Amino acid sequence: MTMHLYDRSSRTLAYANLDLVLRQAVERHAEERLLGAVAPVAGVDTRSVSLKRRGLFHRGEPEHRTIGLLLPHALIVLTAGAERGVVVKSTRLADIAAIQREDPRLVIDTGVSVQARWDGGRAASWFLALGDDPAGRAFHETLHGAVVAARQSG
Image (cartoon, rainbow, N blue to C red; front, side, top):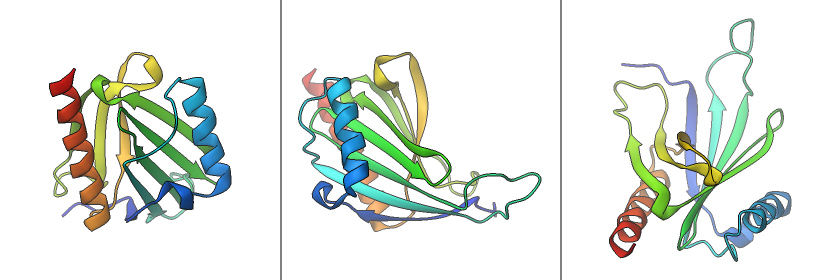
């Protein structure tokens, strides 16, 4: 069995309950990227706690958050931590090429890799941390369904 790097837990998130500072970062990003009003159809808040001790070979943050916001036409992902600050990325659902949940027996992390054109740039993969729990699985399924629907309509 593979040892995980993080203990992850997800919970469903109502956008109105997102911290004001994070909500403002999302709104600025959406305005800059011309995404329109931020009215998520689904949201998830994942808390990641590092299982590795800080030291010479591990300098990562002890804890960070990942927020996933599914809009009718886009996905916004926000990561926030005391050391990394706040990073917001987005992609239109039509630009998502693949969503992959790795085999938990073979990988050391939980979540999904989203292959897309992030922020309108080149195609790249971005890891969306999700807990291996009902909220994390539900967001993954909802995102997958939204991408399938976007491909069929566009």
